[in-house]
Length: 465
Image (cartoon, rainbow, N blue to C red; front, side):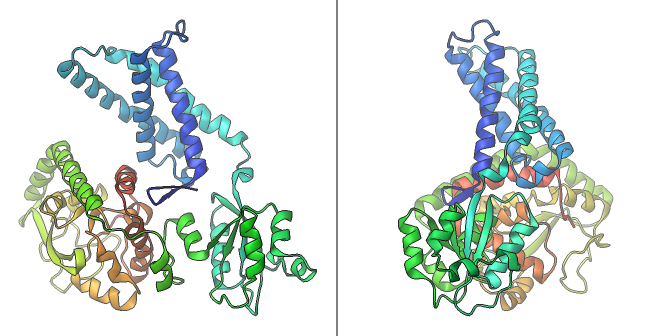
């Protein structure tokens, strides 16, 4: 994986996006050059083709077309590819009109001239996904990993591989040392080879290993000389927690130790990134309010017409450093929904109104939180703020839970785009693994990634309650 601003991006994702970017650019450039003057370089055509390709690529990313699970469903992939082009076309038309009106010196093609380029681009992307990718030996591109350890941590890596074939690595074997009790499948063990006098370095050469993962709680008896030999030969050696963070986008709470937090990269809270993030919040919030103004008006009217009660629902939540604030949402439940005290939302919750069910499913009920962002109580991107009652309960039961309050809570977040709605202690524990990843690796780049992926969550709601 490639690490960009502390966020891990799979190399296959970068490779596929680069190929599709090239094909999209070529499709539009060839069309605009009218096929006959392709070799006559034109800067204006170059910029138009580049903007066209970038817009399509960003929309495809927003709809989850570069997430691993989507590659297993050709029907879903085709639907999202078509939607990406359909969504981009009106945006290009609006941008074209704006440029023609305010920068008339720039010569742009008429709207109808985008259609042939869009069709060529659609054919290029579809061909890439359905014809070229199946011919690539994906297994040959995966990183070959040797795991040192056979206990609980190694077993988690084994389950991670078994749970999905789309991982960017292949485990070539597990090496046992010391008296660690094996928890993995017997055929993975390489004890016999080591007993015959082979070193870990020799084993790594035989299996063409790219990386060695130290996955053992007890490091006593670790073959230091062997590992040093591997390191000096150019093999990458990392510990389990760093490997898990990179491959899953989570931090494993069960294996987490304070020493790893001390020495790992991340958790930076410099004033300049914070100032940029605040500017990002304000700009995105104002743009979002302008774009959703009609939706806000219609939703407020619908709630008012459905029955008595306030349009907005105000609720106390826990924010930065544990400070409490009043969060605003469109009311989606009946007026006396919590007369018997706070509780988790449930599937088919009877407290939810008819309009409430719709705005919850489409996430429209979250829009008024923009006011909290503009006031500075929240950020646009961050861990979801919880109610004090639940925070006190979860902090007692889940280690490191309070650390999610090191940053401002957000409307959307890394946990929201990777995990469905949480309505239990176990769900909160799982979401915390994503929240801690965000707190550790947060950056404007990661915020932008989450912002784009939020479109996928809104259009394809999962776990809404």
